[in-house]
Amino acid sequence: MSNIIPIILLVLPVNLLCQDSFENGILDRLCGLKAGEKAHYNLGEYAIFTDQVRWEFTSKNIKKLKKKYKVKRIKEVATNSLTQKNKVITKKSPLKGGNMEITTLYFVESEATDIAIIGFYSVNFRDSIEEQNFVKLHLESKIPESIFMQYPVAKVDFAGRDLELNNSCNWMDVNNIQCPHFGQMNWSLHKSLEHAKEQTKIQYEITKGKRMAKLISEEEVPIIFEGKETIAKRTNYKAKIPKFLMRGSNELIIYYVSEEIRGRYISCVLSHYKNDKITENGVPALLEKVMKLKK
Image (cartoon, rainbow, N blue to C red):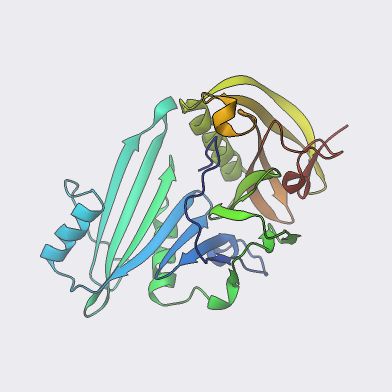
C-alpha cells in the first residue's frame, strides 16, 4: 500500500519481475523483488512473500511457524488442491473505514526436510484459486528467472512500456518507485477495470484514514495518462510534522488513477511534495513519464 510520506522499506540488491507478453494470466500481472532467499511480489490486489525453512513438516514445527507469524491462536486447515502436505491459515484484521485486511499463510512441504512459506496480504479481497495457482507455480519453480531485472532502477516495465530512469531512484516496495525531488508512484495490474478501480479506492481510503497527515483538499481533475484522457482523484495532505524536520515541504499531492492501458487494467497512485520541481506538464519528472495535467 502507498504511504503518505515515502519511507524506504528495504534498500538491498533486488530484482523486478515483469513479463513482456500479455495474456492477463498470473505471470502477466505478476511483479516482484528479490532479496537473498526471500521474494516479495505484487499480483493485482495481493502483496505476496515467499520464504523457506529447513524443517520437517511436523505439528511441532507448524506451531513454531504460527508463533513466528503471529497467528498461533488461529486454526489451520489443509487444502486438497495441493498434493503436498500443507496447512493454510487466514487472519482478518479490521481497518478504519470499514475495510478488512486479510492475511493468508500457506505452509507447504516442499521437500522432505523443507517447508515453504507463502503469504498473501490483501484488503477486502480473497481469491483462493488465484492463491493456489501462485503457490503451485512457486513450488514447481515455474516463475522464470529470465523475467527478473537487476537493481539499481534503470528501466521499468510499466504496463507493457519501458520507462527509462536514472540511478537516483529507489524501490520502496514491489511496483513502487520513489525518485527524490521527482515524485513517487506505485501500481498494480488486475483482472478487470472494476478490480483496478476498487484497488485505487482502497488505497485512497487507507491513506485518508492515517493520522500522520491532514487532508486539505480533494477534487477530480482531467489528466492524460499514458496518452489516454481520463479523470484522476487529486488530494492534498499536510503532514503533522514541521517543515524543518521534513527538510522541505510537508504538503503531499496524490493522484489516484484506474484505467485500461494497452490491454492491461491498471491501478496507479502517483504522489509528490509541493516543493518538488514541476515540469510544464504540471507534475514532477517521474510522474511526467506516465501522466500530465490536461490544459
